[in-house]
Image (cartoon, rainbow over all chains, first blue to last red; front, side):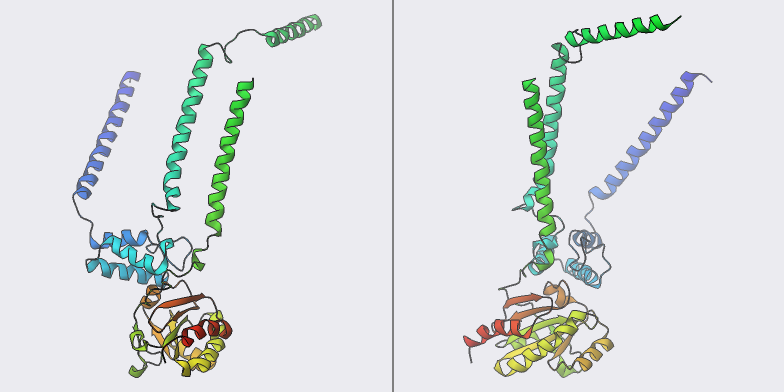
Length: 172
Length: 185
């Protein structure tokens, strides 16, 4: 078997996997895109965004505490009664305060949590670009990285020459 | 050389600012105890409830609405809660002292086995009315985070105080007196 045929087979395999993944993705997208979430999905989504009041950093959807179970029951009942997601959440915020929301609201101090990752990413991008540009400029302008002799390298060379001479002298 | 040093200084400064910012946010997050935050219900009408009595008798059922005009002390407790056992005599003393002045002390049993709860009442000698919040829905309405928790509701049905953890008769008395003095007869 020739190396070219082997490479061609591997390419075909990669293409087949890609096609399969694309098809699967399209199926998932097609199945969910135009479909309104079921009541159960809505209730689970709301519970996932609410903190279980008697737990430490666990959502009402994930906790098995009786109070969290009752939260899920109430959410399901309200969803079935046609109450909007926002209103259901507001009900819990009225009793427990905004800390019951696992995602901080996008106003007040909560905005920091939303903006900080964006700011850090932007700063990293700017910093990275600056380093790249200065590096390229340095190469072009003969800065560090080019083999231009300076007094240091000439001393080094002298030292090396001397050491080599010593070595040669020692050999019989 | 000088430019390079300046750049290094700027980088170090940026890093220091970043580290300080993260440390600040971390400190803020770690010191803010969400469990002790003041009740957002303070000053708002108390959530309505209609709960069966602990003894199961129909006449023991209590509707908060029926207590309008009186100051109500709602104490969430459970027989498995040690601190509730500690504060029980204090609530009893408050009830004895204020029951003729227009104050109702009401115990709400939270997430408990009925048998254990009844035994708790029998052994502790609690004399004020007790109801059961079997499905914890009243607890959720009150924003309960644990037991014991005590809410003081004024004559107009507004929550005026919330105590997280055990209360004493003295603290409770200090909070109740002003609600009675200026109130209607």
